[in-house]
Length: 80
Image 1: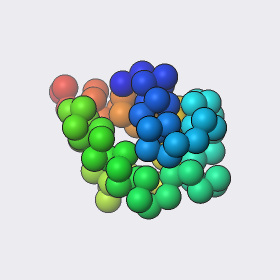
Image 2: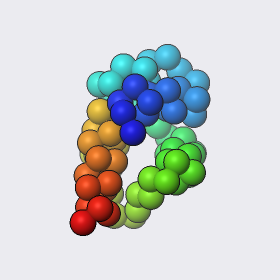
Image 3: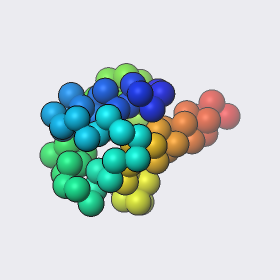
Image 4: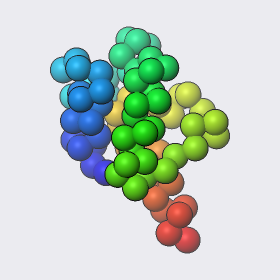
């Protein structure tokens, strides 16, 4: 998933244009609260991207860019 695609998904979840910026502070701003986080993981799973929230350090969810990097890492690990 590309950063722009992820930003669009976050916009659908958070309904705030601030998330369209790749370096938007999602956690610090409160845009990615616990409800939005569950929705994000569910929507990613619907896209075939399965992350394990209990194994992820919250710092990896700080910005759309860090989430995209996390998705890329998970995709690479699964293809091995």
